[in-house]
Amino acid sequence: MNLFDVYPLNDIEITKATGLHVWDANDQQYLDLYGGHAVISIGHTHPHYVKRLTDQLNKVGFYSNSVKIPLQVQLAEKLGQVSGKIDFQLFLCNSGAEANENALKLASFYNGRKKVIAFKGAFHGRTSLAVAVTDNPKIVAPVNENENIIFLPHNNEVALEETFKAQGDEIAAVIIEGIQGVGGIKEASKSFLQKIRSLCDEYNAVYIADSVQCGYGRTGLFYSHDYAGVEADVYTMAKGMGNGFPVAGIAIAPKFKAWHGELGTTFGGNHLACAAALAVLEIMDQDNLMKNAEKVGNYLVEELKKFEQVKEVRGRGLMIGIELPEELAHVKKELLFTHHIFTGEAKPNVIRLLPALNITKAQADEFLSAFEKTLNK
Ligand code: PMP
Image 1: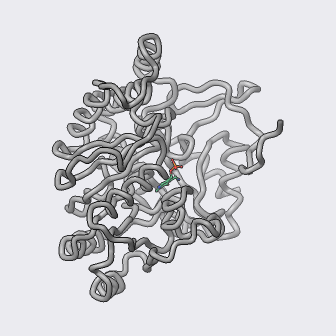
Image 2: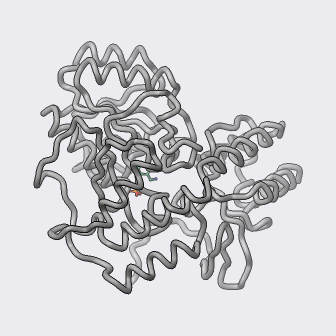
């Protein structure tokens, strides 16, 4: 049997990893500023994380959601404490797309409506409804086409207001990333998020904050939406939540009351997943990693702005987009193959930095120095 060929791959095999470093099969060391696409949040093979998962696997790795799983309750409590949303409720699932899919279902069950507002440049995942609210026709199969989705220009308050005025009574939800990731690190403005909040209140629509990439402390805030001073109805999370173990969730405002049967999943909230997510939160909390994300992130952004070849630096905390002129689109490859630094990209000329939250200033400097050498070559 062959692999179904879906991913364009770098010719590198990672055989070992620790902290922000990974090694390939030839024992070449790399600095990882991509974190496997914002997934590695507390560094690779962190001792507390490894121990918690190993201990849990030796006790019980999985049992289904037909029995009590106290680890789920502990996780909800810890998440409430670290995120500051103590009165929210947690539903656990397995991936970002699944979290968004469930958030949209929850909204539609709640107000009985079908229409969803999404934005140009958005990415919310590849399952049926998640891909329908994603602005990339290439990944929407005919079966995923959905006439109930309304795409509006990003950060355009007038368009949003007009749409609500015309069809507000039919709108189930607005789904928005605090900072568009795949779309090129584009932050929703404060006033735009505030406008979403007030229109959702006025029309009884549900505000879904996709925090899969921009959330979980990456920006120095637990949910990047928090910077607008408004509270969403539902926050979706995945990626950094398990530091590589597949675990995702939705944090649900208290106004949604429990029901049985409409949402569910076989693997969601299993013992190992909860142990992984708890270990991540414990490390984030104990080592003050959100503060570090803010501090090192701000430093990187300020230093990157000094390069005259850089067209624009966008983002917040450790979610950074570096827009280069088209002719410098080779920089990302050069960083990887000459300087052995993993970065991500949004478009070929937008480099994305999504490092683990415990990146040091020295590691940031190592990147800045390699970046300078690459630009000046
Ligand atoms: N939402 C956002 C903002 C994302 O960046 C992603 C993944 N890139 C997803 C949802 C989908 O997450 P997953 O791949 O875990 O389904």
